[in-house]
Length: 284
Image: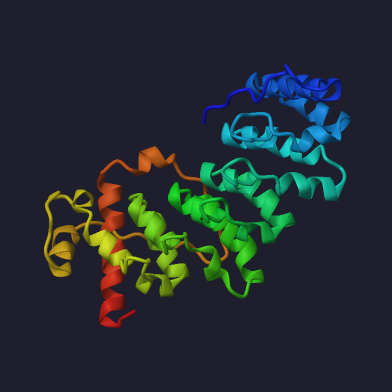
């Protein structure tokens, strides 16, 4: 994630000039990884906590999360003693409408997902400018541990969780996981939310349609006809296991590693197909 300094100092009133100088200093400290100094500034000048210091409207907390600094991001949050100020920071959005929880979910920053969602579980339902919730962001980027973290912390308290699982185009988190070739995550999502298997987006596309349209996910890399033929080409691999209920999975490798079409990918795709097939046949 690229960050650039926000604004210039010219043509500002003296007070605004002072604030811009402070924001530029805050930006420089964040870029240099001086998170202790950033935390001290948070404590000394409250307004800096929600100050947007990049051209994309990120706060220092957004930056700390986006560069995958779990300890530093939490240090910044914990430096704010006033609960109302902390909530204000956690609700602050950048220009894309992303809160710090959106950023944490998309980066797989499980520690910050847990920290934020534990204190303010309602933030899981916040949508950004694209209509995506933190749940959707985790699925889009294949961050299984972050997705499970949000699930186990927040969903027991919600009565209509499915409203958090759709994009503006009707894609669900299951659509998102399959589109990104995150078949292991998709497999777990189906077990958590079986109804999503039959969900359709605004174009009438189901998750199974998406899966069947991905020839690169199969050993032959050819366009296959019929679900029988798909399962036939993928059947001789080990099966995935459903994550234990109530247990968050350990953090996995980066999404880039998950996209390699290796035996693990074939296995996950095969297991996902067989699960779909059992649902089509009405089995268990």
